[in-house]
Length: 393
Image (cartoon, rainbow, N blue to C red):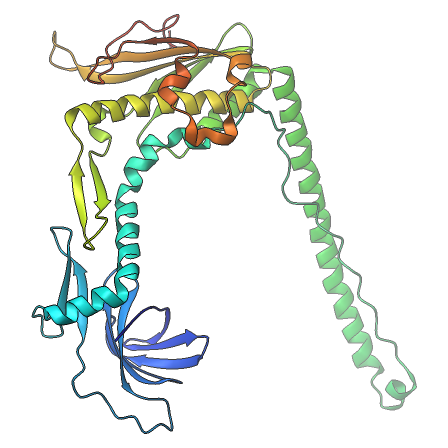
């Protein structure tokens, strides 16, 4: 019995083409349980649904060999149980004998361990995305926009086929001239399209140049459009809304950040056991949930500050204030509550090492600046009065 990773191309329902370094083969049967015929003989397969892992058992040897089918072969399905442990089952649904389970674990333990780690990583991806939103923060280096595609190349004119002696002798002149005329007509159409494409490319380049010039001189309309586009392009793990307002000129910028709610941050973490081929679900405590939310709030403001400084060369200072919704004891409804506010000068921001953001603790990084924060020992962010009011004021 062998464990392998395999890829298949479906030809029709129940029939698949298997591609490998050794050649081509055909599998017949439903997905996860099939018989295949190929260069290395006849095999029976049973897969682990959703993992890409399959057990393979040889029924006969390669073509021309005298090996007969195995009489006592067993098909085994492996699945992840609700308790996080692997279950091993025979084709009839009964539990596989422990001797067979031990053999599978011994032979394929590393492969099963890797698949469990992948499975856990997939389920932890949402929490990781929330806590790692700052990891793609760009350095405060302005890069003018540019067309990625070069100008289209002029199409080559067709070379007309000459009408030689033999063509005239066999009365081929008209056919050749007609073919030359058709080729010339196609070229003229292609040339006209190329001229339109060149004009469009030049117009786009002109518009980009105007935008770059507007950004570099701090044109309010241009920089507002640019920062809005830049912030909307962030792939937020959870709903996050940003509003902004420039000061008297484009050297200062205030941003209000509507942060996700604490209940939207995932509260589960999956961990693969060091031994035993199992995963377990870890519920994060109430204290850890509050700290996770506080980290997301800091990381979100950190990322937004980076996008602002990277996209606006005239920007010298940015003020960010994050708020969330909490119950209003006076009305029973929801009210916006500011919980973080930080003022960051560009010169100080540039001192951070953006090549090693995985080593940056954002809660400490923002504390290097003019940060307003009230956080309990249990991790809860208390209401504050933000810097200079809100961006919408």
